[in-house]
Length: 224
Image 1: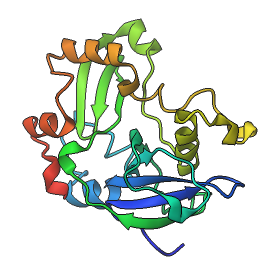
Image 2: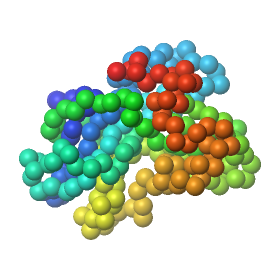
Image 3: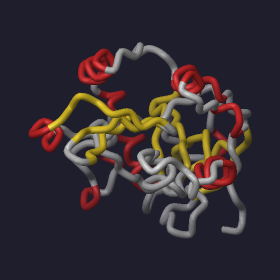
């Protein structure tokens, strides 16, 4: 497809080998927003934001409730079932699913949240969230064993995750169906561990990404 997605675009993904559709919206384009504004070749040597590396070519998307037989049946007021997931671009040639653009809804950047990952560096876990990379107190054997590391999705996985979150695993092809989706790769889905880590960092776990990143010198507004 020659068309390209823009931030705010609501898109559909056609399920693999089925005439059914799920819908989502692009919240942030790492390559077109972050990589375009931030000089990633001139960052401090001890600062390794995952938007520079692991997710450098990704879309941050949200996914909506509902599985539809027709594209025109989508209800734009549908509730959000997956509030944030970073995936390879939906408009990439590597996307094996048919997709298309439905409409555009302006993104409120003050409401954007990024996945919260725990990544290991020099035997220490770092909490990675958008532009933030915060050293935690998780070290040693615990650092080796604890999960929630960065994991890049593809649109097919995101579509299947939206089915899983709706209790419709029967629509996921058996040969590619995973035991679980997303919940092992984002602290959002483990509120107890998340609260513990933020408390140890002396950070309010309820503070939004927009508020926290702005306090730390990374104002999300500059990308919009």
